[in-house]
Image (cartoon, rainbow, N blue to C red; front, side, top):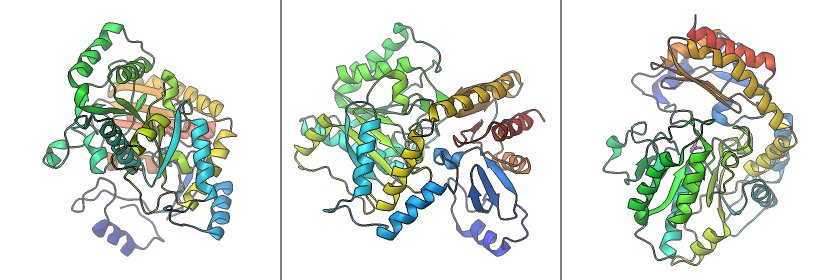
Length: 430
Ligand SMILES: *Cc1c(COP(=O)(O)O)cnc(C)c1O
């Protein structure tokens, strides 16, 4: 347990014995670090120690923490209303947000469903695709194609298209629907495909598309499934094959959206538009849970004219005004922040400071794209040992499996980023 003088040991004991943390055991819990507050790129622990944040709280806190403009947006909205139902009611924060999302997302994405978390936005996308095919009289198209090594969330529909091994599909095999997985693209981001290498995809579509509603993927960056950056050629080919085989393309940009990969949306690397797009994570700058599923007019029209006559989904907290107001301010901050330069600068520095680690004996690969830096180790990393090391070195980095990676807030300074990369280097080369 982290030692901290002020924080009540009884509280930590309760946490350890009663509270599930993400993907943890309650019989063998890993240590947790009490955070008292956060500002800029620093988390302040209960014992007063400050840590430079390398995780952006899982891709979300792109502007850092305790951002005055976002605080004000929240306060102003709270005094009007924190929440109101979205059934039969609308409000300015939601309308403004949807207008902005339609404006900045790839061409054709025209209709917006506001969801309450990333996983829910994926469920919504999958249900849209099923309703779309059903309305077209193709109800036999009820499966999804996807890529191994993907991550789309933890609810059951989303989980069924996550990597089968990482998602432990065998554990849930009687419960989860079975979908069709193709191998992870072999070519990395900067590599090009020969056309023959992609022809095996044509074969796969030929054999399977008549039972598939859509292809769902994370464009360019596979995040929580393995931090893999793949070639835009592959994404272009999938777009083409979906068109040729009457399948929809669902782009899950929950992690990649809002500039993280160097483009506002990762689909832009391949110059494609999906039929359906999921957004979440950085949407509110890390303040509140909020997500969105966008689709084309064609998808919306076909769904709306189908047997149900409506799209069959409507969460209680749909379009939460407080979250929408914060998202509006976060997007305004982002779009006026010269984020392209900031992300490009982070990318250059990550390359300079991490790529030399590729020669280390324990390192398998080093990859950098936009404001994401990944060191893939040959062997799995002991997470609690690594966390302890990083906390002692004044940084917050949380590896998973054999991956030590950072995706800092875009506002991080050169010096603070160097403290992060130095800690990574020292962990690997003590
Ligand atoms: C995090 C993530 C999700 C799930 O979002 P939650 O808000 O955790 O439900 C889905 N897809 C991708 C690509 C993600 O990174």
